[in-house]
Length: 273
Image 1 (cartoon, rainbow, N blue to C red):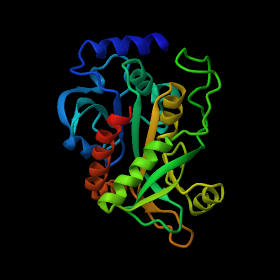
Image 2 (cartoon, rainbow, N blue to C red):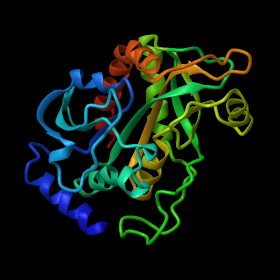
Image 3 (tube, rainbow, N blue to C red):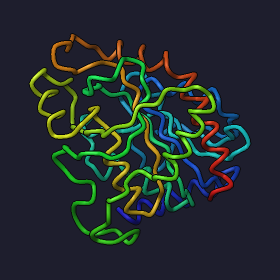
Image 4 (cartoon, helix red, strand yellow):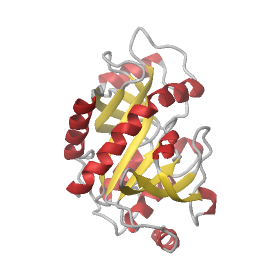
């Protein structure tokens, strides 16, 4: 696996038009954030050695180099999921490659079901912590020489980046929720009893991604900022039928606000890095 990571990183380094230290994973319905990026190079996943290929509707499947505001960035337009049949090592492969090409800060986004009674559809939840409910751990197996065997996870999501998000949101009048993201394997949406159980366990939102990527990023020493778009509700008494199309619609409606927040955060964090 490590040899493949190095091979892919080498292939990308030969083609990279810049040397970004910031990366973004654009989740369900948030691929439109790519429209905010001044693209200098876009590569389809299928053309990158050793890369998986995204199979989910709404996930374009490109690696983008460009600028967001004044900052050089790398963006994944579409991610990989455990429920697609990939192993955790395949799901998190791009994050390993990011580390090898010099990424220091990773911004992750997703669509999720809100379980906190104070949440509404369309809310943006800053992820303050997560609960890993995936059946396979992304660090299972031999430890790759990119981080410690037993990485610390007391601050999976960077507190300074969370503070920066709150400052920007206050200036711009953006309402942010804060909460714990619980990651499950999917691909089914949760039953009312599962929503209730996950909330009792401490989750404020639930989804099918992000956690594996964050674990691997922290293993590599990459700082992480994460947000969830609340696209449906799993609050007891108001659980309703949901479809992937409805999730995409709700996420797309929030995209302009997300783009504004992310753009400002990335440009201001340039000074801090």
